[in-house]
Image (cartoon, rainbow, N blue to C red):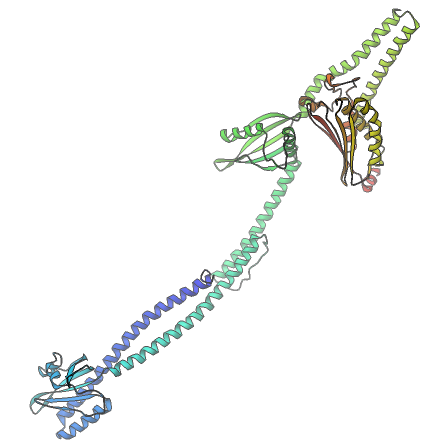
Length: 600
C-alpha cells in the first residue's frame, strides 16, 4: 500500500533522482581526486628530482651532496638513484621501496629517453625483475632528469611506491562515499517529510470527496497555503458549493415535477428505450392496476404493459413520431397519446399521456339512452293505466270482482310510477347536493350483523351462502346508518338476485384509522365488460336473462353512488362474466375536529 500511495511514489522518485545524481557526482569526484593525487605525486617527484639534480650539479663535495640527497629522500620517503656512466648510487633510507636494477633504467623505453636528450620523463606501473630466482613486481612511480656531471651525460631517477597514493585515494574515496551516504539519508528524511506535507492536504481532499459522494455537500477543506494545493482546495470548496446548489435545484425541480404529475387529471407513464416503466403518476397506476386485474396478474410480481400500449411504444420507436390509440379495460375507455423522447438524435424512450374518456363516452351514450329509458320505464305503467281505465269507461268489467281487480292493478301501477318518480326526485336532489346526512357513531360489528340477518331468509330461499367478515381495528365509525344501510341493502340484494343456487355472497368490512372499507363479493354471473362503465347510471339494468324475479327501476346503484359520495367516499366495481362481481366502497373516518369544523 505504501508504494501505491502518493507519499511512496514521491519519496521514491526524489530518492532515486538524488541517488542517481550523487552516484554520477561521486564517480566524477573519485576520478578527479585519483588523477589529482597522481598528478600531485608526479609534480612533487619532479620538484624533488630538480632539487637533487641541482645539488648534484652545484655541490663540489660529492660526499656532502650524497648525504644531503639521502636526507631529502628519507624526509619525503622516496628512493633516489644517480647514474653516471657505469657508476650508480642509491640513496639509503628506511623505506620499504626496493632497489630497482640499473638495467631497468637503461632498457625501459620511457626511462631510457633521459639518456637520449635533454628532457625529463615520468612513468608509473609495474617494473618486474628477478631477484634470487624470484620474480619481483613493484608498483611504483618513477621520474628521471638528466644532469651534467663530469662533462658527461648522467641522470637522476626518483621513484616511490604507489601504495601511498592509493592510500590517499582510498581515504578520499571513503570521505566521498560517507558524504554521499549522509546526503542520501538526509534526502530520504527530507523527501519523506516533503511528501507527507504535500500529501496531507490531498488526504483531506480525498476524505472530503468521500463525504461529498455520500451527500454531505457542506464539507469544507481548510486553506493552509496559497500555492497550487491551496488553489486546488479553493476550487474543491467552490465545487462543493456549486454541487450543493445544483442538487438543491434538481431536488426542487424533481419535487415540483412530482407534484405536477400527482395533481394532473391525466395519467402519465415515462418509458425507457426497452419499454420499461420509469415514472408514473396515480392515475396511470390505476390504469395499470385495472389491466392487471383484468389479466389476473399480481401487480407486485409483474412489470409489464398492456399489449396495445406495447404496440404503440414500438410504433413510436420505429417511426419516431407521435402515436395514439384508445383501449377498453374493465369497462373503462382510455385514450393514450404517446410521444418519443430524444437523446440528441436518438430515441431514448417515450412518454404516454393517458386520459380516462369513460365519462365522455358515457355521456354520449346517456344522451342517446336517457329518453329511451325514461320512456321505457313509464310506457308500461301508463299503457296499463290507460288500458284498464278504458275497460272501466267502456263498462267491460261486468262484476264487482272484475272492477275491483282492475282497480287494484291501476293502484299497483300508480304506486310503481310513484316509486319511480320519488327515486328520480331523490336522485336529482342528491346530485344537486341537497342531501341531508344524520351522522351517528355506529358500532360497525352490530351494524353489519343486523344487515346480514335481514337477508339470511332470502339467501336461504335462493340456496345461497351469505357470509360476513369484519376486521375491526376501529369499532366505532361515524356515518349515516340509514343511508349506508340503503347502500348495502341494494348491493347485497343485487348480489343475491344475480347469484345462482349454491353460490356465495360475502360482505367484507375492514375498519382502520383512516377509513372504513366495504366489499360485497358474489360468485354470480358477472357483468359484461361493455356494461361496467354504466352500472352506476340511471335506469341501468343488467341483462334481463340474469334476473330471477321482478325487475327494479335501475336507479338503485345510482342512488348508492350518490350516498357514498355524500360521505366523501368512493365506490367502484370489478367483474368478470361467469366468475363474479365485487362492489367496493369506502368512507373516510371523521374525527372530533372534523365534526367541529362541519358544525362551524
